Length: 323
Image (tube, rainbow, N blue to C red; front, side, top):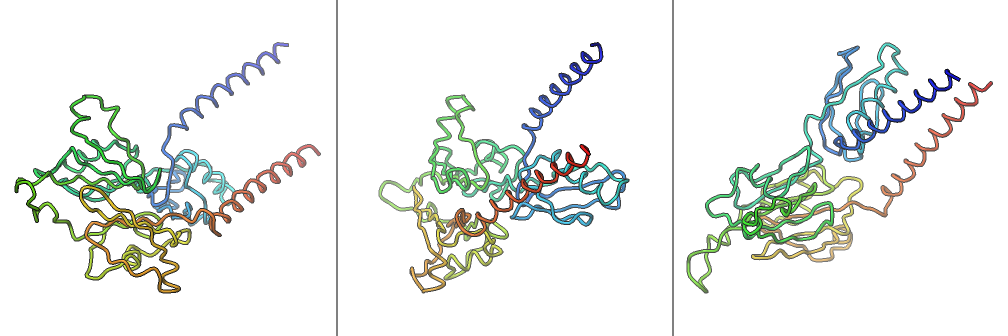
């Protein structure tokens, strides 16, 4: 009886440990594409590697080959790597994973800030925190006229923010949260040139276009004369295998709002239609994922195969030990 009580206490303690461990793990950062990872093996430092997570969510290690990293916490990935490495080298049972650069958690900021460009975060900031990270607004910046273009969650949605009013209210909880691939533009303050008189400075824009989404190297590129959408995508590293070139969105910033144009690049490259769209300064091109094509189907098949393999392996182990 005493032995049964001890076993029961041990089971309760184990469940509590697993519960708290799961809750702590749930708060950990989830690895994503383009993150840079440091993989270390303290039992054999010669195997240490720095790797970048590919767009398909995988990394390649010299010891075990390909392994899926996206969607896992660093602790989960370290455990997975340790298990696989131990099959090849019994002397190595543990690995550690450190995220060096959180590139999957990137946002873009343009317009009237001191340091426009791409920023990456372990935890996504709100719009005011991003502006401060970019050095704050310039003397010409207008906090009452900020535009957010959603790049992942509710992608394509355009949000207009009067941050001046929100700051005056003194409630940071009302500041709009940002999501990966979002673009924030701080507009220029109205000109003092008088009513009805257009200001050349107010319409002046940087000679850049932004390419985000499913391309090799998303970010800002220099706008060249007569550049079209396909040219910009090529300069951004080209589309990834899971890109949907039939639903490319172009955000054309016409003060005070942004126009959204959907371009079927696949159709144009095959048939010459629709007509070529000439890019303008500070246009943003969003290439969405192909959610219903081959790559989406392949992802579901790959997940099924992985689960099926795990079930079969477990069954074989149970069958072996029951003999």
